[in-house]
Length: 488
Image (tube, rainbow, N blue to C red; front, side, top):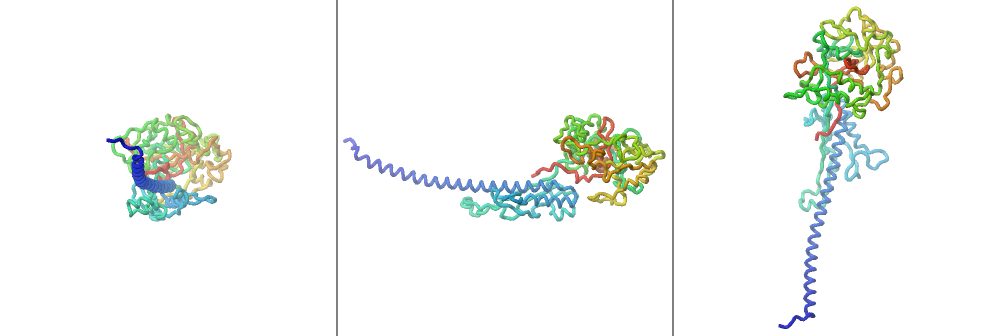
């Protein structure tokens, strides 16, 4: 056999190379189509993902803004709607402002149909109109962007519809539910001195046995006897009505909640709370006193800021608005009617009561008229009508204390040095107001029922055996929500 001739192989090699090149070109073209398809699919998916993020951010932001305004009143629902709409307002001088979509190139307009309100994170849900008509338990807000303009959630796909012809336009929505996670209530309970939510005490409104503008030593009250005062530590982590055995609260576990003035629950009524008698004030007084800008761990300024007014209204040198110097920091004790309370408790003030025995009056609140009280109805936004200092002789008789230089508004709200002292750092108004549970007494075992939440203004820092609070009225539970969060 003769050897192959090199010159004849060259054409064969060229033909083979052309064939391989053609095959590669065909393979490349096919691969390119697949690659471009995946790139297009990735582009579609990225646009869908981005739009989902935009719609969910909108739902979350609006729900949080609205939920923070809910306080159990129709005004709260109105404010929630206003805050929701404000989140979409375009700011002057900006291209976008507010909430936007399509990579922040287009703005949106709010529609109230997109928000609903409910009493639990799972509903049932009411429209804004229905919620205003029944606002008491509207504590959660649900936002659904599908109720806004359809264009906001629509994404025109370029490649997905090749695989799924019916999905040329994909609609994306966001849904969020937001509501409170805590209440501004101190984990402390004292006994309600009477069972009536409101009663006529000589023309003055008396609430659960307390009179506005009068200071009480909260450690020295007991409606069931003349012995020691009754007071309780409340477990701030166990919601009312929770079945089973719960750990008894301790001073160490409760101290951070005293600092912040909160309990980690959304309601304190509707079931029994876990309590422990007695309240260990000597271990917790420092936590109370953060309100006067006095700090010891675990209280910190960041989570437990001082009040805007930290002046202590000490009875014997810092109550210049009263003519007679009070004889003590709170109203004098009385054991009349078999109760451990004060001289302002009985319907007939004990004989021998003097002007000084009423303690400092009206540093935070004025006595309210019973005629402005309506049983079962919430207190008006402007408050109940009040008495003037000229009525002291009638309200506190015998004794008849007189005003000397009472300011135009209550001393706490004054800004001059006579009635106020500013903290060195930023303060928060109302931090000296302790929202304290008024319990149905007697309490047996480790469970107690809360009748209402009383507001007590700290006139002076707490001592190891004394916590003085001037009664300022009943706080609606719905108004005490704080720390809203997204539930879903």
